[in-house]
Length: 65
Image (cartoon, rainbow, N blue to C red):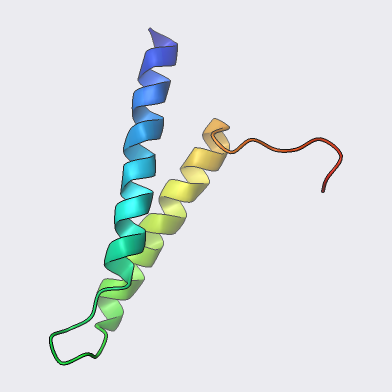
């Protein structure tokens, strides 16, 4: 049961990371960027990536630093 919940949380955080990366690159209709929008989605990407790293979702290779 615990493993299933971990997989669901990993999938949710991965979805948030992917969505935030896409939305971070959004533009206004005139072609300029909205800095608060970009920074909020950048923060969401960083937070979800850090949480995924702490959960061990990123596999590390032995022998590399």
